Amino acid sequence: IFDLGNVLVDFNHYIAAKRISPFSDRDEKEIFELFFDSHLTEVFEEGKISPEDFFEEVKKCLNLKLDYQKFLPIWNEIFFLSEKNRAVYALAKILKKDYSTAILSNINVLHFDYLKKTFPVFDAFHKVFASFALGARKPSSLIYKKTLEILGVSSKEAFYVDDRPELVEKARQIGIQAFIFRDIAGLKKDLLNLGIKI
Image 1: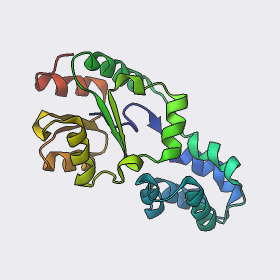
Image 2 (image 1 turned 180 degrees about the vertical axis):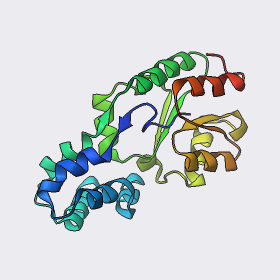
Image 3 (image 1 turned 30 degrees about the horizontal axis):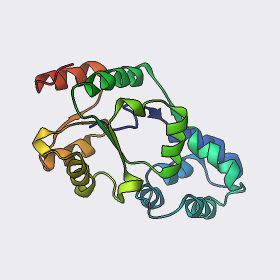
Image 4 (image 1 turned 135 degrees about the horizontal axis):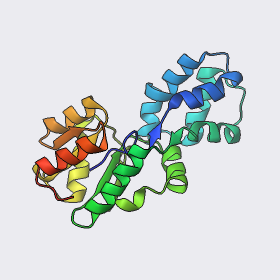
């Protein structure tokens, strides 16, 4: 089970914060905080509000002089592929031949749809678990448990990799063999140490 952001696809919310600041009276730091880790982003990633309602809230919070259609590309165009991402994708494709592979991501529907159209990384996986579709986001134990249940595996049978230590720690608490992603060499080592063939 692979995390998506900063593992398979890199992203930077500052790109959006910078582009949106001319249309707001808030500074880039405030915009970044709202986009990256606020209650509003949380409920959007849990699928509890629609994209249109999310935009209306952003518009209010940032006093935004921008319409929805112009907001969409700014919100979405924060992703890019690095050599590290490409190496992880290539590894996932190899693993898919012998193992059940999945993505587990905290992500909203706009970013998910944009990534599906723009970044061809999903074909290396049998299943994709998105927080907005499951109604929960990491580090809630619910999202990990739902993922295991749908995959039909126990926590001990699962290997999970994520770039965020607190999300790895939560997975470990429910018995998943979870590892922090730093680079491709470390990921391969973690897999091999568990007897997973590459």
